Length: 391
Image 1 (cartoon, rainbow, N blue to C red):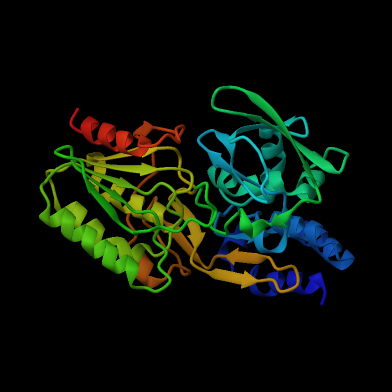
Image 2 (cartoon, rainbow, N blue to C red; image 1 turned 45 degrees about the horizontal axis):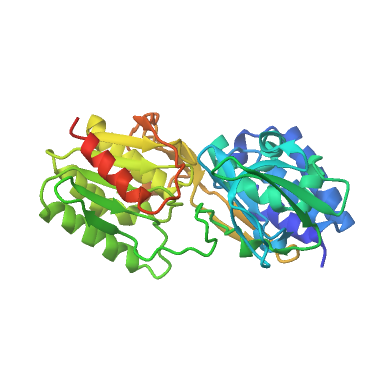
């Protein structure tokens, strides 16, 4: 089997039907296709995957991209974009390394590498920061970007929370499957295998109000999410009318239609003040959830955090396409979402179009960036936010 078969699958099954490519100039697309075909013909898998990443990143749509994780090997280091920095969050192969901020790779500052990698990554700048750290552990990608060490090692400079600098050298041959450290749907937690224990975690903060943590809207068995949302909606309707905080940080999406009973329950109460916590990992259906709340609650909703992983206008739906030769996966789109203006087109499914609302451009009411990994930091944040809603 040849890598050209993988490319042909992309050309036949993705590009013609993905509406996000309609605005790309044919000459630009042809140039990217030629580059991918050249590497595929040479049998250079990693070079082909990077070329395919550049091709599928053309629309700047976060739901359309090549996901190389299942087809590559990386150094045993898990980097995550947390707050304004990239941090080393976990290791594999019993690798000893201090946790902390990544300062440089092979002597090059991280922000320079991120800028050079931008054309390989799909979506908004925040989305690029979510999916980009895998490149920092991928020796071939670093070499392709021009940041290899010219040796058989990769050198990392790290800064811990006390400001101490540590240099870490890893042999390039000491790799693990990327999927071991980098999940397809990047959630930002230290544990790459993290799964939510509950899809709706409700806490009563003793007179201050309620918090509802919604970590994910993915529900493979199609029963857990409706049950969790129904429980949360009942709690909102029958509980004391106090301020409510909803946390969708790290929520990478799923099925927003299943969350509408909770939206209805929230919007029925005219006496509460509301806050929603978001971050760069808030994506897809979780972005839609925030857009709907913003539209119906108006200035009764305080949006706190950092810019999300997408805006209110994007292409989504679609699905996943396996590339059997390389082992990579393509995420493609089929439908237009415009939650900024509340408009649809011929690609928007009717079940989505009927719920579209003009939420406008999302402007954060308060910027807050995650910096603490201390125990109980989340509880302190929730109390602080709930208290501030009465100010």
